[in-house]
Image 1 (cartoon, helix red, strand yellow):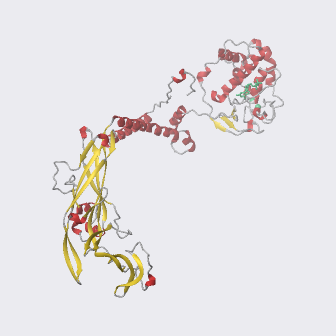
Image 2 (image 1 turned 30 degrees about the vertical axis):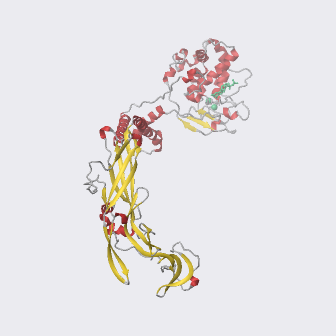
Image 3 (image 1 turned 180 degrees about the vertical axis):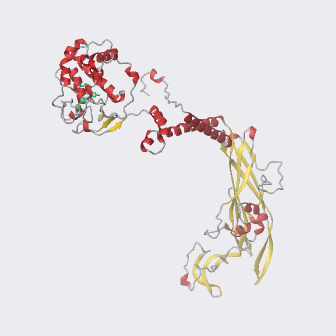
Length: 604
Ligand code: GDP
Ligand code: ZN
Ligand code: ZN
């Protein structure tokens, strides 16, 4: 786009010019890809409801655990072991936790009748001692139950441990009872009340609707909407055994997923419950398996404060509520349509890829055995589609030898070497445009003389003939000073300065043979004064110049004519170099007074 200079520059519309390829194969392929893209886009639109504005759920949860369990405890009273049964109800085994969680105790270790005082620690590898040297006064081990007094005292029999100031007697380091004391907690039930809200859609609902039968129990298939869950069933769903988990405790996630469609005609907003074990299942592998914590019940006995310490093992249930609510939204629909339109470009990308890979390169490299079948049309499409542009550099030059089918592109400094010997890249000669020939001046279209008439051939107008006679004679003779690089015998040494000379050291041929200047067309196309005058007047109809300036114009026009003839394309014209023989023939035909010619200069 040109820089904006005026109002007209602003009021422009640019559009791409495209190439339409009339091909049955590619046309079918295009429609096939379009149909696939369209089907996918429509499918995703409907199944994922991409026409809706989605909003995350916000919620509140409330839980109630119900159930009673009988616990048989073994206690030692006055040296006699006996089993006592006690009843645990909701108040005993559930604890409200922060967030959407609740805890159900399934197992415990009790240390009863603790008072503040001095007593020996429970014997472990860290606390055993043999004398007072083994203990340190004031030392507090984070693993121990109290602060050491520095004395080593008898714990039981011959076992001695460090004395601590703590709640005495200190808690025993014991494994959790097996089977779990409250293993029957698997029959407990929990009622979950969940209220949700989509504030953006101004919609509120809850999982327990008015008509719901409250005496139900959740079942994945038979009663998936029941909000009352049996704890054992939850574990069965995740493939765990409740009585195993009950020993050490664990963490279980109850997921409530709300996928709500709030559009009037498909309204649906019911929760889906699922369960997931959230702690480490492999008890043996984890360092601290299960889930437990300690708490104490305090009381006073004979005005002494005492406590019962309980290490509670159990299951923490985390309730995770998530989901989205979607409602039709025109903007969402427009955004989706807009973004999916780009997928239709897939056909273009794919077919262009085919054209590029199956065009000439693959034939040249013989990648595909039967490549010509695919390549020929593709190469044609490729040529129609792409226009290659070479960087216009000062060093760029094109050379055309009459005995070679290609044009040579030389893109390097010559550094004293003649252009005739320079190496370069071969590029195909642009195809001949026959329509251009019809624009040749009328005089040129006169019938060609037969070989016998050659002597009478009058390439120039009668007025010029006398002037040109000496040149014709001279041109017929081979110059004696034809330099070493010349293959046609008609080139002349350059008269340019030392460093630019190599540019003009170029012959019309690669290998020895006849010179292009001896061709009949050279005279008709390049040297014919009426033709050149016609071309000059064609450009500037009222052109009238003095002879010196006219010669200069005619010479340049002759250069151009030669280049147009031998290089064919306007793109190459600025960088095309004339062979020495042609250059001097033209200079002789249209000389400059003083004969000081500037030679080729790169326009860039
Ligand atoms: P001048 O009249 O003194 O400049 O001498 P020339 O007859 O050598 O050049 C006339 C014009 O033709 C200049 O603008 C040159 O750049 C251009 N010219 C000369 N030689 C070549 C050539 O080999 N190829 C092209 N493309 N242009 C040339
Ligand atoms: Zn030559
Ligand atoms: Zn030549």
